[in-house]
Image (cartoon, rainbow over all chains, first blue to last red; front, top):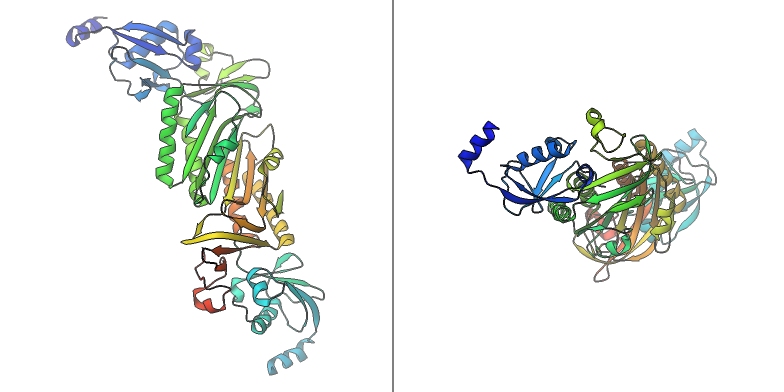
Length: 94
Length: 94
Length: 153
Length: 153
């Protein structure tokens, strides 16, 4: 917590509004297909960790990929206002 | 010819009746789909050489395979009475 | 051309769309719902897809296949929704002048589709249990959606 | 199952004959008459086969594919007679539990069919000349059936 406060102070912590869509096992575990959030998470990585704790997601971050606005992106990417975020569980097409 | 006579004397040269079927370019060059022959050829190899000379076949023996009674066989095989012989030009299925 | 289909995949129109006088080879792949997976009897399954990203990624895969192997054309359709044993889940058709490229491209496309597309499969087994394939883990079976746990394929 | 067909190959009944609840993959290969071969415009062609030996040899090939790759089933049909550009000359369908074996077996079958079966192809080119494919030689073009001479594929 101390660290977060420090970081916030250094980095001008901002709150952004994002939409998170859930698919497959994450949708089941979340009990919803999407939600709108106001978050101060500094990256997609932080956002997933926070949601995983809140909702008890069983998948570790290294099992997932992440997409923003319909493109795969890096977990370290910062959140932008209005972003649509999708965490992508291990796929099983075909 | 001398050689053939000697060989015949040594080997009990026999005459056998065979049917030869022709396909593709050999049929075109022979001008017939099949013929019945009485031959003293000691092997399939000798039979082809003799027919190639007579009919002017353009294909060399090493470009062909040979089948007797619907099975691939070795060129050195002897001819048997009533055999159906097929010389198989380079194939081009598919 | 790639698309998701909520209904049975009709392959004739897809193959028609590939016709080309230069084509000497057409290779088609059909992925079918099997009656078993990893030793368990499968009675039904459901595919769910993140469609917008899925279409973009699939079109990339088709373009890569075209560039890498010099094929004439390729098409792929993936089912979503509920399927039963024997139903076609995915169809890939490739045409090229010669067969070698068609086989290579076909294999490339289906391998990449299975690895890269955001599609998930929930299998229902004899007895009624179900499981999101590849999402269950021995270490945290308690957290899984069903009692069924098995390794990645 | 292998057969020669004097008429258009109908693939639906052939694929029906392969249906199997254990099947997870079906790979189909279609060999199509191209509008060109080795740089020449092809307008028509004719396949001729030594059918009795051809069927025996093809059944051997299918049995080898089954043994080597552990597939569930395979079927192949080859046209004989006159074909035109766009017509299907050969069809191979393989089904197996997983896709890897189906691709391997499919490729094996078509490669062996093309190499081992007593089938010959006479191409007719724009301009009216014709040639038995693989039977013409630069060294003895005069002995050939047409003025067209080209190397082996």
